[in-house]
Length: 180
Image 1 (tube, rainbow, N blue to C red):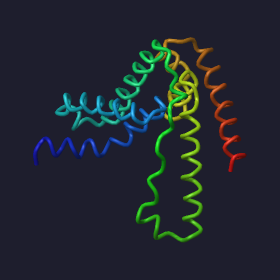
Image 2 (tube, rainbow, N blue to C red; image 1 turned 90 degrees about the vertical axis):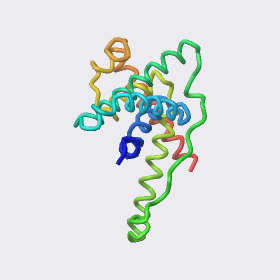
Image 3 (tube, rainbow, N blue to C red; image 1 turned 180 degrees about the horizontal axis):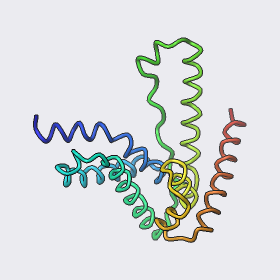
């Protein structure tokens, strides 16, 4: 077994987690792909120490988060709004095991996946000042204090942005329900 094949397995194991982190923070799948590539380039440079580390998942998530936050700062400085960019593709569909399940569980699973996809689309529609703290809090389990430190803003701003982000997301989800 070569180092290349070991790194390929490493990438396959963590690519969904890294991409998911990036797309939630950035709101744009194509930019998330770029960030994910950069994360794995950095991982390749440190692969010999990372491959045996039990904390590799946390390291990858931290690097992805930091790269996304840096990207958002650069974009903000150019006055570009991510909330106006196109939403991503969608769901991949059921797996083989899911297709063998009973019709009622298939229907429930399909409904759950559709709801998750609606939520992801709603999150991507939020402006970055609401989306980023919301994702850090709910998907990465960061505290308000940690989010304030990472973003370089006050604790009050983090709380306000998360609250307003939740309200905006609720309105988007209700509008999506009405459109059905």
